[in-house]
Image 1: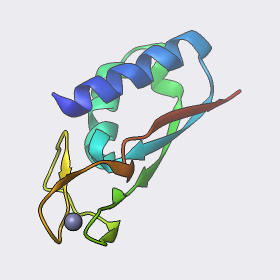
Image 2: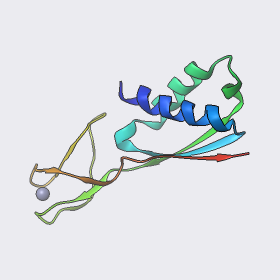
Image 3: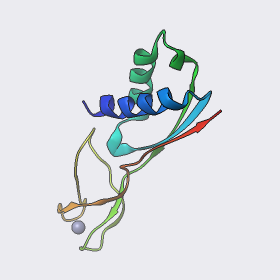
Amino acid sequence: MHEQSAVQTIIETLKTTNPKKAKIKLGMMRGEKSRILDIFKNQVQDTPLEQIKLEIEQTPVTSRCQCGFEGTVDIPGHVHFIRCPKCSKIIDPLTGNELEITTEE
Ligand SMILES: [Zn+2]
């Protein structure tokens, strides 16, 4: 599952640093903020990681295409690739694939 792997990455990082607080920049393509928080809560229950405050900043998917399209791309759920909303060509995302974890002591 998509979100599962993002949560796994977050947990692995937090385990090694064990911070009080963590800020996460989460691209839409990685999963939805509320789902990530739910899964995280479930997985860290009754572990020391339970105490960590997670702050998630969700970033939208943006891209540009040869046809002239440039902007935000709405994605239906979780996808591995995106299509241009104008000409349906498969395009690379400029943003939306981030998973950046910043921890605070
Ligand atoms: Zn296009």
